[in-house]
Amino acid sequence: MPDPWPTWFAAAVRPDVDAALRDFYGQLDAVIAARRPVCNQSGRCCNFDAFGHKLYVTALEIAWFIRMADRKWQMADGQDNPPPDTRLPVLSIKNPQSKIKHLPTCPYQINNLCTAHAIRPMGCRVFFCQQGTQDWQQQTYERFLTQLIALHQRFALPYLYLEWRSGLDEALAARDCFSPSPRP
Image (cartoon, rainbow, N blue to C red; front, top):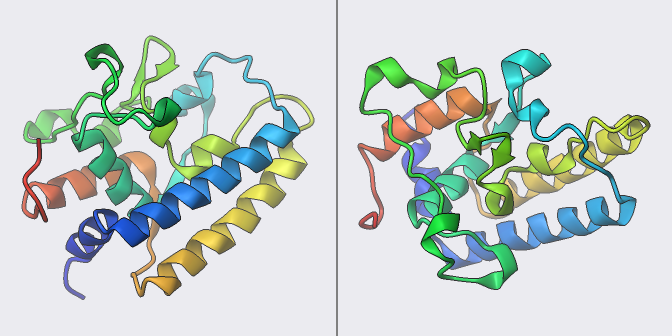
C-alpha cells in the first residue's frame, strides 16, 4: 500500500474535512462539559511513561493537529491570530536523536501544562483520572470513536489508529517529504 500520509495531510487542509473535525470536537467537548469532570492531576497523565498508559489517535487527527500546529495558532476563543506567547511550538524530527516516540511525555506538555489544549485529539479530551469517571469516559470514547470512523468513511479516507508519539514521528517524517501547501 502506498504511503497514506499524503492523503491525510491533503484531507486535513480541505475546508469540508476541517469543518467536520471542528464540529466533531465541538460535540465531544459539549458532552464532556456536561459531565463536569475535574482535572486535579495537573497534566500528570500527559507524562505517559510515568502514568503508565498510552494515548491512541487516528492518523487523520494527527494530520489535522500538525496542520494546526504548523499554522502556529490555536482555536481558543475563536481567535485566528492569538498572541505569539500562546502559539504552539512547531515540531520537527530532522534530528534523529530526538525522536518523539522515545519521549516519556507528550511533546506538547510544557511545565505540566498542555500547550495544545485547543487542538488536542479525542483521547486527550475524554480522559480524566478523577475517581468515578471511568464508566462514562469509556462509553463516550467508544461512541465518538464510532463517529470518527464514520467521518473517515464519509470522506473516503483510510483509517489508521496508532499511538500518539509514534504517530507524530511517522507523520512528521512524512510531512517533511510532502506538503500540500507551503508551511508558514
